[in-house]
Image 1 (cartoon, rainbow, N blue to C red):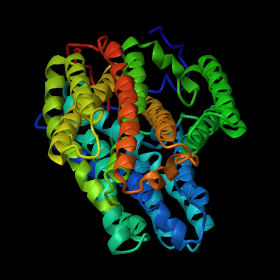
Image 2: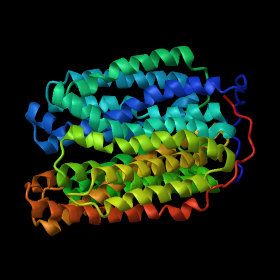
Image 3: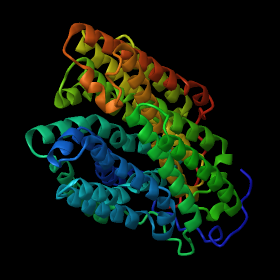
Image 4: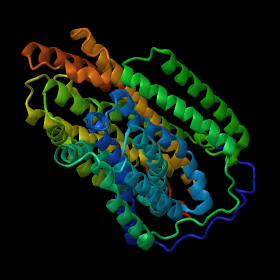
Length: 506
């Protein structure tokens, strides 16, 4: 990378390093705090998804209106993620972490007592403002404590929270919605959050001294947040409508793209004072890892949308049983991550990433052949293999993202990483939702005319209908297979040996 001109921020003396952590106890303490806090917003997103029909009925609102419970949360995340790097520079990770947890707790309590759809949507925005910073701050703290030597171990621990949330969400949501009340999908958060706040206060060290000279880049924040809101809203509309046509979808995507271009040009001129310095992408490894982050969202995380739908639509299973059937994927990821983290610390990211992609593709391949009678044992084995692949792919990508950067760049890089993950996941979900909608309409004309949320009505319990739906899903899984396979090329350029350790500022 080219040298950055000296600025008041850049001239700020680095904070003194924290005491050495030779036995890894500090990393273990930070990991405990981070996993408890990071699991909440990841789990919450999928728990809410399974309750949309119940919310529509109990709050006497249409399904498109209730869909805003998800959309509003997604958009509020997009607004605050870019803010996370500056906040950590200005106040330090520990205070920002505690404030984010408290904000998420308050939003969750308000959601749990919402009296109508409008109040619930408004409170979801508040919840998103708190939750949006949790993951970037978590990644920054783990990367700061671990340093390059133990980056693999650190990111594998954090990855468990990232991947278990989508797997556990349908189970938790199914249990609460079927056996209790939808309000508990929000009210389970405060006890967990308060425990996280207490542990953070007691166990987290001050990992980074506040940089009082850090100034908030308001124009950059406005540009980037507006671009993300437009892009994510456009993708959300495309996903629910089953296509990229329509003035709203096209207008949002074009506007978001133009604003993003303007932000890039603005950031290049402002340099290190920008809310996110795009000059980071001159670092080759960081750029490759960022591309993979986007593609991971498009291919792998998008494919996660199809799995519960297959079990519900083709196999006719309920929410709770569907959640249990997807558990093998979470188990595979949980088994793989601690192992692959240590392997990365020894040999680098490239080989584990390639192995993970091949395993995930192998598991996805099984679903390209699945029909209404395919053995659940066989599919569970395929999901376990996919989970191992997902764990082996996610961890090396996170390691490559942070290991190539100097410590002072990590807070802003964590914001950039989570933006790409969010956009990639939304893009992947939209592409596969549109593909599935069109495939279902091809085999059963008009049965999914209302978009993804109406696909369930296509199931009639008749044998020929189940077979046609199975065909539509098989074709869609082939698209997911192709989107994932694209990642093999950039993965070849990841570093294949651990870089020399740098001094780590904490």
